[in-house]
Amino acid sequence: MKKGWPEIGDLVVCTVVNVVDFGAFVELDEYGRKEGLIHISEVASGWVKYIRDHVREGQKIVCKVLNVDPSRSHIDLSFKDVNEHQRQAKIQEWKGEQKAEKWLDFVIDTTSANKEDLQDQLIEKFDSLYYAFEEVAIQGAKILEGFDPAVAEEIERVAKVNVKVPFVDITGYIDLTCPKPNGIEVIKRALKAVVKTDDTDIRYDVSYMGAPRYRIRIVALDYKKAENALKKAATAAIDVVVKAEGSGKFYRELAS
Image (cartoon, rainbow, N blue to C red):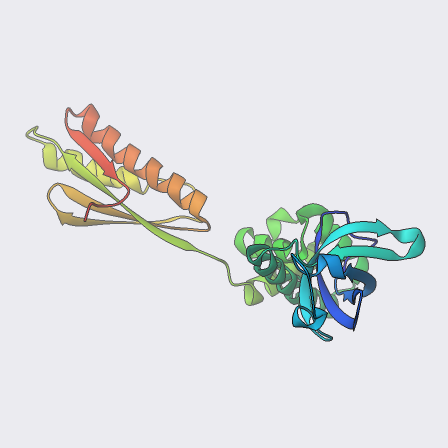
Protein backbone atom coordinates (compact mmCIF):
# COMPACT_ATOMS: atom_id res chain seq x y z
CA MET A 1 0.00 0.00 0.00
CA LYS A 2 1.40 3.39 -0.99
CA LYS A 3 1.52 6.26 1.47
CA GLY A 4 0.31 9.80 0.96
CA TRP A 5 -1.22 10.97 -2.29
CA PRO A 6 -0.56 10.22 -5.95
CA GLU A 7 1.21 12.75 -8.14
CA ILE A 8 -0.36 14.51 -11.12
CA GLY A 9 0.30 12.34 -14.18
CA ASP A 10 0.52 9.08 -12.24
CA LEU A 11 -1.36 6.02 -13.44
CA VAL A 12 -3.45 4.45 -10.67
CA VAL A 13 -5.52 1.29 -10.30
CA CYS A 14 -9.09 2.06 -9.28
CA THR A 15 -12.31 0.27 -8.41
CA VAL A 16 -15.51 1.91 -9.64
CA VAL A 17 -17.89 2.31 -6.67
CA ASN A 18 -20.65 4.59 -7.97
CA VAL A 19 -21.67 5.70 -11.45
CA VAL A 20 -23.83 8.82 -11.78
CA ASP A 21 -24.96 11.02 -14.66
CA PHE A 22 -22.02 13.44 -14.39
CA GLY A 23 -19.24 10.88 -13.83
CA ALA A 24 -17.95 7.97 -11.81
CA PHE A 25 -16.65 7.79 -8.25
CA VAL A 26 -13.79 5.36 -7.72
CA GLU A 27 -11.51 4.14 -4.94
CA LEU A 28 -7.75 4.12 -5.51
CA ASP A 29 -6.64 0.58 -4.63
CA GLU A 30 -3.00 1.51 -4.02
CA TYR A 31 -3.67 4.53 -1.78
CA GLY A 32 -5.76 3.21 1.07
CA ARG A 33 -8.89 3.35 -1.08
CA LYS A 34 -8.88 7.15 -1.28
CA GLU A 35 -11.78 8.42 -3.36
CA GLY A 36 -11.44 9.95 -6.81
CA LEU A 37 -13.80 11.31 -9.45
CA ILE A 38 -13.82 10.70 -13.20
CA HIS A 39 -15.90 13.50 -14.73
CA ILE A 40 -18.03 12.37 -17.67
CA SER A 41 -15.83 14.45 -19.99
CA GLU A 42 -12.87 12.25 -18.96
CA VAL A 43 -14.63 8.93 -19.41
CA ALA A 44 -14.21 8.64 -23.19
CA SER A 45 -13.30 10.73 -26.21
CA GLY A 46 -16.30 12.37 -27.84
CA TRP A 47 -19.82 12.59 -26.56
CA VAL A 48 -20.83 10.01 -23.95
CA LYS A 49 -24.52 9.15 -24.22
CA TYR A 50 -24.65 6.35 -21.65
CA ILE A 51 -21.81 6.46 -19.12
CA ARG A 52 -22.37 2.83 -18.11
CA ASP A 53 -21.39 1.80 -21.63
CA HIS A 54 -17.85 2.74 -20.55
CA VAL A 55 -17.62 2.19 -16.78
CA ARG A 56 -19.72 0.27 -14.29
CA GLU A 57 -19.77 -0.42 -10.55
CA GLY A 58 -17.27 -3.01 -9.38
CA GLN A 59 -15.05 -2.63 -12.47
CA LYS A 60 -11.27 -2.52 -11.99
CA ILE A 61 -9.80 0.23 -14.19
CA VAL A 62 -6.62 2.26 -14.67
CA CYS A 63 -6.84 6.06 -14.60
CA LYS A 64 -4.48 9.00 -15.01
CA VAL A 65 -4.31 11.53 -12.17
CA LEU A 66 -5.30 15.03 -13.37
CA ASN A 67 -5.41 16.93 -10.09
CA VAL A 68 -4.91 16.27 -6.38
CA ASP A 69 -6.23 18.43 -3.54
CA PRO A 70 -5.38 16.81 -0.18
CA SER A 71 -7.06 19.67 1.75
CA ARG A 72 -10.39 18.62 0.22
CA SER A 73 -9.47 14.91 -0.02
CA HIS A 74 -10.24 15.27 -3.73
CA ILE A 75 -8.61 13.57 -6.73
CA ASP A 76 -9.60 14.22 -10.36
CA LEU A 77 -8.97 11.37 -12.75
CA SER A 78 -9.12 10.56 -16.45
CA PHE A 79 -10.10 7.19 -17.87
CA LYS A 80 -9.86 8.21 -21.53
CA ASP A 81 -6.20 9.32 -21.30
CA VAL A 82 -4.94 5.79 -20.61
CA ASN A 83 -4.17 3.65 -23.65
CA GLU A 84 -4.29 -0.16 -23.72
CA HIS A 85 -0.53 -0.60 -23.43
CA GLN A 86 -0.41 1.65 -20.36
CA ARG A 87 -3.38 -0.13 -18.83
CA GLN A 88 -1.84 -3.59 -19.21
CA ALA A 89 1.55 -2.46 -17.92
CA LYS A 90 0.01 -0.79 -14.87
CA ILE A 91 -2.18 -3.78 -14.04
CA GLN A 92 0.84 -6.07 -14.30
CA GLU A 93 2.84 -3.78 -12.02
CA TRP A 94 -0.02 -3.62 -9.51
CA LYS A 95 -0.41 -7.42 -9.44
CA GLY A 96 3.33 -7.73 -8.90
CA GLU A 97 3.20 -5.39 -5.92
CA GLN A 98 0.29 -7.37 -4.45
CA LYS A 99 2.34 -10.56 -4.68
CA ALA A 100 5.34 -8.82 -3.12
CA GLU A 101 3.25 -7.65 -0.16
CA LYS A 102 2.32 -11.29 0.53
CA TRP A 103 5.99 -12.28 0.27
CA LEU A 104 6.83 -9.53 2.74
CA ASP A 105 4.29 -11.04 5.15
CA PHE A 106 6.18 -14.35 4.91
CA VAL A 107 9.36 -12.52 5.95
CA ILE A 108 7.62 -10.77 8.85
CA ASP A 109 6.13 -14.06 10.08
CA THR A 110 9.60 -15.56 10.62
CA THR A 111 11.55 -12.49 11.77
CA SER A 112 11.18 -9.73 14.32
CA ALA A 113 11.14 -7.03 11.65
CA ASN A 114 8.52 -4.28 11.63
CA LYS A 115 6.53 -4.62 8.40
CA GLU A 116 6.03 -0.92 7.75
CA ASP A 117 9.67 -0.06 8.42
CA LEU A 118 10.98 -2.93 6.30
CA GLN A 119 8.62 -2.10 3.44
CA ASP A 120 9.75 1.55 3.51
CA GLN A 121 13.39 0.46 3.57
CA LEU A 122 12.98 -1.85 0.56
CA ILE A 123 11.00 0.69 -1.48
CA GLU A 124 13.52 3.43 -0.69
CA LYS A 125 16.36 1.24 -1.98
CA PHE A 126 14.63 -0.42 -4.95
CA ASP A 127 11.68 1.93 -5.77
CA SER A 128 9.34 -1.06 -5.87
CA LEU A 129 8.62 -3.90 -3.47
CA TYR A 130 8.33 -6.43 -6.29
CA TYR A 131 11.56 -5.21 -7.86
CA ALA A 132 13.28 -5.61 -4.48
CA PHE A 133 12.36 -9.31 -4.27
CA GLU A 134 13.21 -9.85 -7.95
CA GLU A 135 16.68 -8.31 -7.56
CA VAL A 136 17.36 -10.36 -4.44
CA ALA A 137 16.27 -13.52 -6.26
CA ILE A 138 18.77 -12.73 -9.01
CA GLN A 139 21.72 -11.37 -7.03
CA GLY A 140 21.23 -12.74 -3.53
CA ALA A 141 21.20 -11.13 -0.07
CA LYS A 142 24.52 -9.40 -0.74
CA ILE A 143 22.64 -6.47 -2.27
CA LEU A 144 20.81 -5.88 1.04
CA GLU A 145 23.74 -4.11 2.65
CA GLY A 146 22.62 -2.23 5.75
CA PHE A 147 19.69 -4.58 6.43
CA ASP A 148 19.55 -6.85 9.46
CA PRO A 149 21.46 -10.02 8.36
CA ALA A 150 18.74 -12.38 9.57
CA VAL A 151 16.06 -10.39 7.76
CA ALA A 152 18.19 -10.19 4.59
CA GLU A 153 18.68 -13.95 4.68
CA GLU A 154 14.93 -14.53 5.04
CA ILE A 155 14.15 -12.09 2.19
CA GLU A 156 16.54 -14.06 -0.03
CA ARG A 157 14.91 -17.37 0.95
CA VAL A 158 11.41 -16.07 0.23
CA ALA A 159 12.53 -14.43 -3.02
CA LYS A 160 14.19 -17.55 -4.39
CA VAL A 161 11.14 -19.66 -3.57
CA ASN A 162 8.54 -17.29 -5.02
CA VAL A 163 10.06 -15.10 -7.75
CA LYS A 164 10.17 -16.47 -11.25
CA VAL A 165 13.29 -14.80 -12.64
CA PRO A 166 12.73 -13.68 -16.25
CA PHE A 167 15.22 -14.94 -18.84
CA VAL A 168 15.57 -14.30 -22.56
CA ASP A 169 17.13 -16.59 -25.13
CA ILE A 170 18.73 -15.18 -28.31
CA THR A 171 20.91 -16.56 -31.09
CA GLY A 172 23.57 -15.18 -33.44
CA TYR A 173 25.99 -16.66 -35.97
CA ILE A 174 29.67 -16.27 -36.84
CA ASP A 175 31.65 -17.39 -39.87
CA LEU A 176 35.28 -18.14 -38.93
CA THR A 177 38.04 -19.05 -41.38
CA CYS A 178 41.81 -19.28 -41.02
CA PRO A 179 43.99 -20.48 -43.96
CA LYS A 180 47.09 -21.02 -41.80
CA PRO A 181 48.42 -24.57 -41.20
CA ASN A 182 47.29 -24.28 -37.58
CA GLY A 183 43.91 -22.91 -38.63
CA ILE A 184 41.93 -25.57 -36.76
CA GLU A 185 43.68 -24.69 -33.49
CA VAL A 186 43.02 -20.99 -34.14
CA ILE A 187 39.30 -21.70 -34.59
CA LYS A 188 39.25 -23.72 -31.35
CA ARG A 189 40.84 -20.80 -29.47
CA ALA A 190 38.31 -18.44 -31.02
CA LEU A 191 35.38 -20.54 -29.84
CA LYS A 192 36.84 -20.76 -26.33
CA ALA A 193 37.02 -16.96 -26.30
CA VAL A 194 33.23 -16.86 -26.73
CA VAL A 195 32.51 -18.23 -23.27
CA LYS A 196 35.08 -16.26 -21.26
CA THR A 197 33.02 -14.13 -18.86
CA ASP A 198 32.78 -13.40 -15.15
CA ASP A 199 29.03 -12.75 -15.37
CA THR A 200 27.26 -15.73 -13.81
CA ASP A 201 23.87 -14.40 -15.02
CA ILE A 202 24.76 -15.19 -18.64
CA ARG A 203 24.88 -18.66 -20.20
CA TYR A 204 26.61 -19.40 -23.50
CA ASP A 205 26.28 -22.25 -25.93
CA VAL A 206 28.33 -22.59 -29.13
CA SER A 207 27.47 -25.18 -31.77
CA TYR A 208 28.88 -26.12 -35.18
CA MET A 209 26.55 -25.64 -38.14
CA GLY A 210 28.88 -26.63 -40.99
CA ALA A 211 32.07 -24.91 -42.10
CA PRO A 212 32.66 -22.03 -41.64
CA ARG A 213 29.55 -21.27 -39.56
CA TYR A 214 28.96 -21.53 -35.82
CA ARG A 215 25.87 -20.65 -33.78
CA ILE A 216 26.12 -18.70 -30.51
CA ARG A 217 23.18 -18.99 -28.10
CA ILE A 218 22.89 -16.58 -25.18
CA VAL A 219 20.56 -16.90 -22.19
CA ALA A 220 20.43 -13.78 -19.98
CA LEU A 221 18.16 -11.82 -17.69
CA ASP A 222 17.02 -9.28 -20.28
CA TYR A 223 17.34 -8.46 -23.97
CA LYS A 224 19.81 -5.62 -23.51
CA LYS A 225 22.19 -7.78 -21.51
CA ALA A 226 21.75 -10.69 -23.94
CA GLU A 227 22.38 -8.54 -27.03
CA ASN A 228 25.50 -6.98 -25.47
CA ALA A 229 26.80 -10.42 -24.48
CA LEU A 230 26.18 -11.80 -27.97
CA LYS A 231 28.06 -8.95 -29.65
CA LYS A 232 30.98 -9.23 -27.21
CA ALA A 233 31.16 -13.00 -27.70
CA ALA A 234 31.17 -12.70 -31.49
CA THR A 235 33.77 -9.93 -31.40
CA ALA A 236 36.04 -11.94 -29.08
CA ALA A 237 35.98 -14.95 -31.44
CA ILE A 238 36.52 -12.85 -34.57
CA ASP A 239 39.44 -10.98 -32.98
CA VAL A 240 41.24 -14.27 -32.36
CA VAL A 241 41.08 -15.39 -36.00
CA VAL A 242 41.85 -11.94 -37.40
CA LYS A 243 45.04 -11.76 -35.29
CA ALA A 244 46.01 -15.12 -36.82
CA GLU A 245 45.45 -13.63 -40.32
CA GLY A 246 42.10 -15.31 -40.71
CA SER A 247 38.67 -13.69 -41.11
CA GLY A 248 35.36 -13.62 -39.33
CA LYS A 249 31.88 -12.21 -39.76
CA PHE A 250 28.95 -11.86 -37.36
CA TYR A 251 25.29 -12.34 -38.32
CA ARG A 252 22.48 -11.49 -35.91
CA GLU A 253 20.12 -13.45 -38.13
CA LEU A 254 20.61 -15.60 -41.21
CA ALA A 255 19.01 -14.58 -44.48
CA SER A 256 16.13 -16.83 -45.44
